[in-house]
Image 1: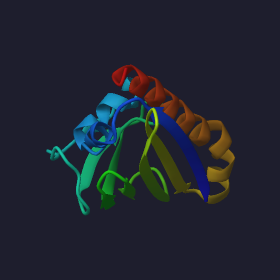
Image 2: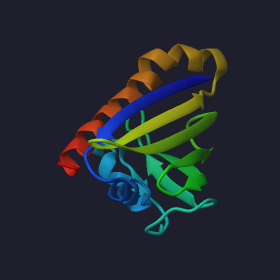
Image 3: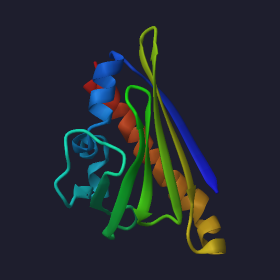
Length: 149
């Protein structure tokens, strides 16, 4: 299993930060366009435990694939967790944590994941998967800085 962790200071208050990131409708805004991220079903303004989100993404070589995640835990103004139910990973567990700090909100993402295809997945990890995750979160970092100026 692998783990990817990223922290970012978001220059806003806790409620505003939470409202933005806990809305599934904002997912597309923080995802690189080349990922072809499209939500397939109507989604509510606010997430809740048990919410299933079905979308397509094009993570590698522009090949579209269906990805279904479930919001499994929500502690308002503190954290939420999404877990893959169908998609490219064997396991995907993404924790989103929010903490009010002096100059804004410290947002921490912890993604724990396991790749399919055993040995081949382990070989692909540093060259494709780890690189792509870093690229996606780097993009999100820039978008969040611009959005919360």
